[in-house]
Image (cartoon, rainbow, N blue to C red):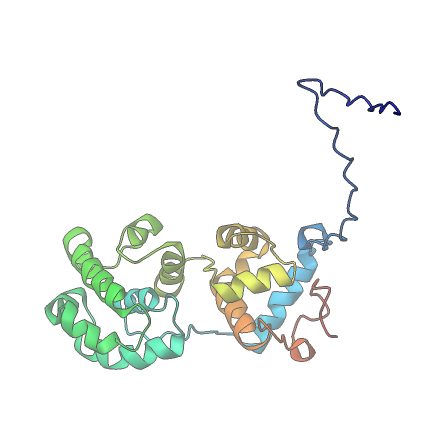
Length: 250
């Protein structure tokens, strides 16, 4: 009878692991060109751009309707995550009965909600407006504070609110950065930034003082009606030859 031989089974050595196969590096997608890397606007180009804005619209106005600094403050607080047109529709009747902090307090939160219920987040906004009215009366003598810190201390008011009120009510050279200004600052390469504050400070740094009183209105209007989010109207843009946007259509 034939003898059966078995192959020896190799023993596993404790602690030794099978070496993983080296990973194959995937080819990287070409990085998008950052606006930070584009050629910055020259002072002459910036002056030319705002000269064109001024010539086309010498006295730009904000589109939020108001009758005094207090109603402007209230309108800006109400405009968060809402359109100016929607706010105006609600505040026309409101400001006829409550155009001062005391009248707003007398109106009360419940009745205020009825006036602004067509505006998004109206319950929270009504609460803030009543609270800020009380604070304006108790801490600022019934007058809207004329400092950034004072305005930012009010319920519902942030840096953008302060910038709008300081500029429109008191003539300060501030730059309110909303979604339109943020887009224009980045898309054109005029003042690229990852945050509204970064864009704000960038614009304040490069825009000449002679244009600063109206600069934020020109940029808001430009973003709202020309440099649109989805389909910018490059063909009618006043500054299309200066714009650094690589995808512009002219």
